[in-house]
Length: 385
Image 1 (spheres, rainbow, N blue to C red):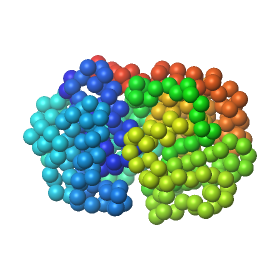
Image 2: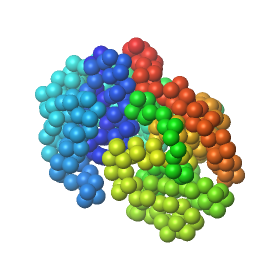
Image 3: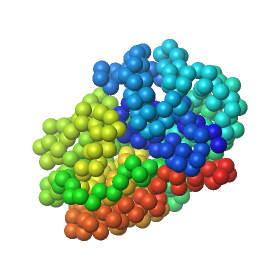
Image 4: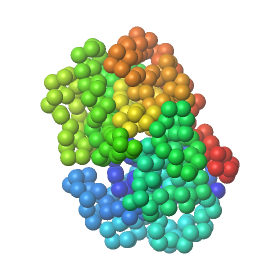
């Protein structure tokens, strides 16, 4: 099939964002399909050097060119600058031909709206990477246009493994959500059997956007969950190191976190691209991380694409419960926690049986997240396989 993947690779030219989207292209290509990348979100580009929105997309286009070349996609990418409407990469003619004649468009995380195209693509697939927040926004009367565009897709998937399941508070939107996980290109995350520096790490933002409200109850970001676990360094001898964005309004309490024993790296400086992001995970002993408050409170079953990358490297993970452990195994290589005491115990367990957890982590990645398996499952569930 001729498959078009949309994303925000150019808009947010950062390491983690790159891996979020490129692994869909790698997975579908690994299945033998003709895969293209098209970014036309309507947004003005973000300049990570100036740390501001800009009409100049030079940095973004250069990053895309270098990254897509490195992954073997050559000229099979298109970026449209929201500031002036100009197309870069393979250009406007190629973009319009893709949307008129492709077999499948994969709209990852609401990244592609493609408002002025002649649509002939046979199947439109929507992938929700932000459960609870997505569903609430779909029901907001102010977002009628967004809701209509999402519902116009032919199939709908979510990272919320428990959406529609027991105890999940995500509202019914009238959409039948199929379940999926992030595809991980296993060959790009080879198993690491060499000794790693003695640090548990993660990559996160203090708060990505403002809380939402549903039925009188707020659903917030990672800052709310981190507050519950901020004394963790005093309860374990394990060194804990976070590559952490400062969040909206730069409200991260950096000095307090340092005083409590956390090592905080500026994510934008420490992990400016996909190579440095990969190296940060590779040179970690394991991951420890919270989830967004909204994922936890709504019991969505969300599971992190970042955590799946740690697992592929053979780096075990201790990550907060969102309901995911009802669908993915917890205990060997991957351990869930809901309380401080459980987090402390899980870290100790990883350290006491590290090699066993390493092997189990890699096995989990191969079984549940391998990119060709995940992408084939998307096609099968959408009845395209």
